[in-house]
Image (tube, rainbow, N blue to C red):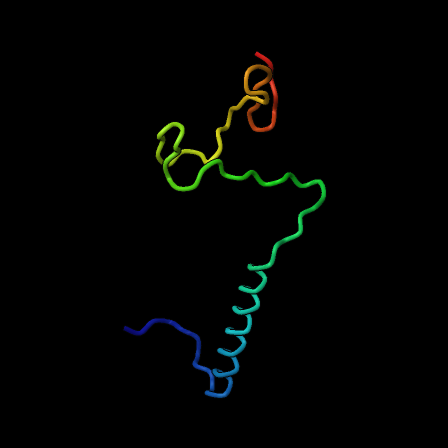
Length: 88
């Protein structure tokens, strides 16, 4: 099957192209492994409350890693949802 394709490069240019591709991929992987600095005003990413696919507290499979609605104080107080706090 003949499909449209760019013209092949001469062997020397093909080797140069492949070397540049490997170099770009290696630098992209190195940048992905570095910790990115966040802006001081950026919110801190939330950490998961459990590992795996099943929530150990509720038994829910495939649900959120953090409970979206929660109390600020265990026994009493306000509830929060997406960072907004309300008092019922």
